[in-house]
Length: 237
Ligand code: ZN
Image (cartoon, rainbow, N blue to C red; front, side):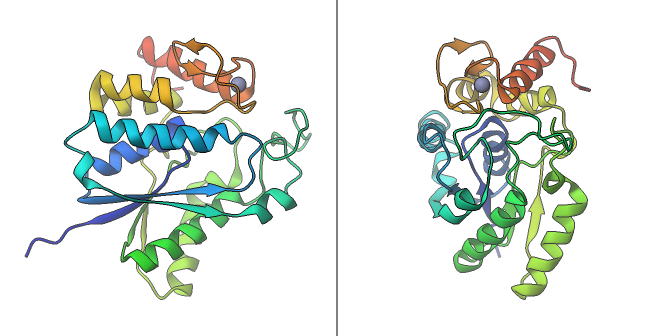
């Protein structure tokens, strides 16, 4: 019997989740996506995720037939309770406790629960997400230990057997670019450079070698540094 494996990718439209989407498409038979709208200051992100999906579908005929439903979950409450620069019009700054104030507390835990609920209704047990332990800001909800505990609770609470894949967990940002190249060659790297969105200010602006963005915020700096290391073949940072 030919069992088709279905996956659900947590897909924001950024570099990391776009790479995870390609990773899932290269492995699984049917891939759906879920995005979260929580009144981000920058609706540009929601537009970029649609562009990435459309371009992957158009440019990768081997993957297009596997691409299933795209789900958008509205979580306005998350914007309402978060005093952060992603959702409020304040400057990006360090909060003094080691985390940048772009941090939305527990955001990934909330996303995982919603994603699992979507997967439950779609008969999907494989979740894929772009959390990365090497991430610059040390977000505690990106740690593997956090995610393992969350999945245990979700599986208990939904009487389910989900598994969560995090293909970027131990990669540097340069390593993430290299993974995209390995999965879809230069065409995929170019697509992610041009269509994905990372900048915190929501600025598309000029197209730099590493993509669009203001070039000055922490997210742009991280992306640009990762790109520079990718270009020079420095994958360990
Ligand atoms: Zn920026």
